[in-house]
Amino acid sequence: MKQSNLRPQSPRSTRRISGRAQQDHILDPYQRQRKLHEGTVCPQCGAVYHEGRWRWVARAEGAAEELCAACRRINDKYPAGIVTLRGDFARQHKEEMIHLARHQEEAEKKEHPLNRIISIEEDARGVVINTTDIHLPRRIGDALKRAFHGEIEDDFEKDGYFVRVNWTREA
Ligand SMILES: [Zn+2]
Image (cartoon, rainbow, N blue to C red; front, side, top):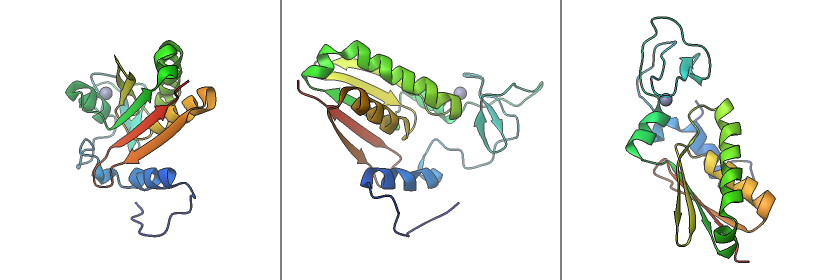
């Protein structure tokens, strides 16, 4: 794994920081330090640890079972990412926006089984989406911006495995 202090090439600071975090898996407290056995199955979601990562493949008979990081985060209600949708537009178009976020989750999860939505909560100021990973929030944010415009801010915690994406549109 590349441990780089090199200057990242992407011109966008948010991408750059996420890119670095992507390499430093060790920062995620939910990543196991020891190696899992080939074929380990998550008893909760059915993902299979195969060739060094979790995938959606068929489980082998007699496979070892161990909860994946995403399921542990879901059980602990401990998000690695939070997307907040704020402003009048978000309040008025909640359903469409949640639908779009769910659609992004489906697409992301196919490739990356550990990237999922933990929960979607509605409050007086709009919608809060909690995710198991630090990549899905950015993907949801980008999709929201493409579909509904608005403003995005992201905030990546340098010392922890956590990202917050705030989407806002007033009218
Ligand atoms: Zn799982």
